[in-house]
Image 1 (cartoon, one colour):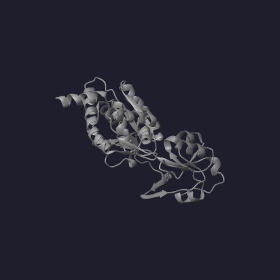
Image 2 (tube, one colour):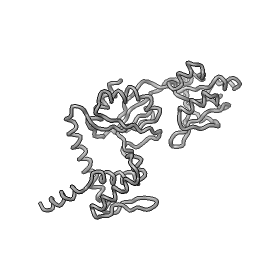
Image 3 (tube, helix red, strand yellow):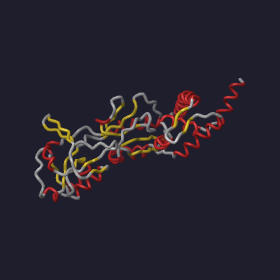
Image 4 (cartoon, one colour):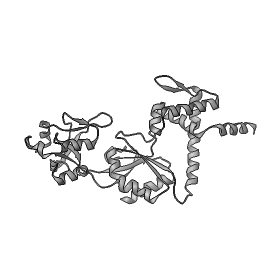
Length: 306
């Protein structure tokens, strides 16, 4: 009993924020990475971990100018702390399940384009139906590991969703098309097949991992994936569309993004028979994830959208 009382007194002195900060630094391999994932600052996390070490009277981390590593004590503490915090979270979720309205924050990682497409009706529609809920959208073109990225679910094109995830289709099929401004096409060679793009200035989209977006074509069972060339490389699809509108070259963009420019005649569609629709977006989450009431409500809402 004396030992239990000692443990209770020690635990009462520990701040949950310090414990969470310590685990975040461990899981993400450093203060900067943990700060990006949690939305905190490296200095705040550093102060929290230092406070935890002071309360425990033990050094948990070895800090150098280049990296952070666990001491032997820190490694044992982290190993024991993970299931304890997980069980605490499950206990809090169990209490929340009895609420009339779920109350929690859902963190979604999505590309900027995907987030814009589903803002209405998916995200805003859900918040209207569940006024006690919060949604934190982190627009990032990089595919995050949901287990390490501090997010609950992701939103990407169906083809990019990892096979071990549960995926729910969002919206209908999508379509990428090839466009150019009339002024650019006036004195340019004709574009009758994907091979003709080699003679054109193709505006490039750079992905988060520094790779260039490949232009994909399909017609009557034949599929092509091309790496095109051009003088301009941009990291946002909206900038690519603006450059095409300005007559700088040929672009590969989504039909939904270019629709108003096509209708107004500011852009002309090319290779129409080579760019059919393809499966669209999907919301995805870890198959073995233990969902709280808020996440269950969100998943149900997405499924009901059809």
